[in-house]
Structures are given as C-alpha cells and as structure tokens.
Image (cartoon, rainbow, N blue to C red; front, side, top):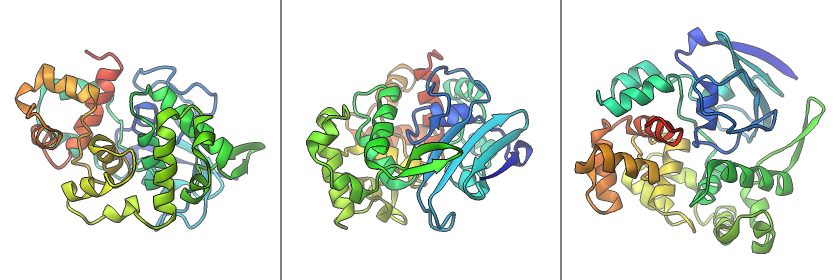
Length: 303
C-alpha cells in the first residue's frame, strides 16, 4: 500500500465531502458507512474510498484509492500513486476561482458558492456514471448510492485492500450477463431492464458513452439518449459528471424549482429550449458548475 498527501495550497479551494456527497457521484463510499449523514460544508475528515478502473492516460491498472481532507492536506492511501487518479477524478487541476469568477454575479449563485466553496465537479468513469444515473430516476441520493454499492458487491470483482475486501463496479460485460430478475433483487425496480440492456449495448459495441468526446454538446446529448433508460436529463448528468461537458445543465427537480423561483424567463417549455436558456443565464461555458452548486445548495435546505 502506498500513501501520501497533496497540499491543498497547490489545489486551491477544495471541499471533499461536498464533492463526493453532493449527488454527482455514487461510486465513492465513506469508510465509516455514513454517507449522506450531513450536508454541512467541510463536514469532517472522513475517509472516502473507491475502486477505479484503468483510465487512459491516468492509470494502466485497476486501483483502490482512499482519501480524506484534513487541515491543509488531502491525505491518501492507495494500491498505486493516487495523485494523478485523484487529480483526474476530483478535478483538482480546475482553477476553481477562475471558473466561479467566470459565471454571472447572481444572488442565488453567490449564496451557493459561499456555502460550499471548494466543491468540485467530479469526473467519473463513463460506464459506471451512465449506470448510476439510469438508476437515479425518482430516487433519493442515498438509495441511488445503495444500488451502486449492491451491484458492485454482487457482480463486481473483489479487491483486497488493507485487510478488507472492496468491490469494483461491474464492467459492462459483467452486468450484461445478469438477468433482469437478479437486478430487481437489488431493488432496482423498473430500472433493472434499462441497466441490463444498456450494459448489453456497451458490451456488444453497439454504443459507447465515451464516443461522445469531441462532439458538439447537443449532438453528444442526443447520442447518449440512444441508451435504454436515458433521456435528456440523464444524458446531461453523464456529460457533466464524466465527459467534460462543463456547460451541461441537467434539468432535475431542484433546477426546475430554481428556474421557477429565480429565473422564470428561462422556462421555455421544452427541455432543449429551457436547457439552452438556463445555460446562457448561468454563463455558458461553466454553467454546469453553477448548476451543481445550486442543486446541492437547494437540496441541502439552503433556501
């Protein structure tokens, strides 16, 4: 096992708990088993852990990473050098001050930025991210997270780390081999056939979420809706939280509430038109950062 620490002065503002517990990612788990216990900013020095698949240009092998935030440091333990992995997954190389400074000076955004200063967007692996958000429809974050943990435990490869057995998220091939009934047994409900069929599509090479890299944003969103169970909102989540489309603004319940209460002029009726209007209101290029702060701020009871 390797270990080390990243000085946060080299990263800029950072809030680990807000980043991994804000509903962007369901692939991290708190080592004490108490994910989503609190929504306070900088909520403690908890250890978070995940099993990371090989990532081109980042790591050639599967790795286990455990990380916590203490005063001035991001401490880590891993099966390999975790610095490039954490930099990739938690976007530690984003210039957060510049990004937030490039978004409009709006009262709601300013309140959200002040409350959760340091929250980053995540960059999850595409296939697990896609499956996570297929499972997200009409679900609380804790239940979405539980589904992903159960799929990993039941169908993913076991990985030994520091005397414990963790589980990798299943590959597309592993999930494609499961039956709808097996997935329903994990409380996926009506999402089970969507997960199974989407896994088949990826495993068979019929479609690949990573194929959208290099596409124009709205073309990429349209491509992702070919997966079973993926509409515009889920597609936007995958684009934003995995594939570097930082302009994406998923129109979930909380963002639609924000539009109704603060930006009613952006309600243009259909998804595409409303999405375009709120993206422009939030500044375009980094609108997804604004969206994520507003989403977490409202979900955590900020208004």
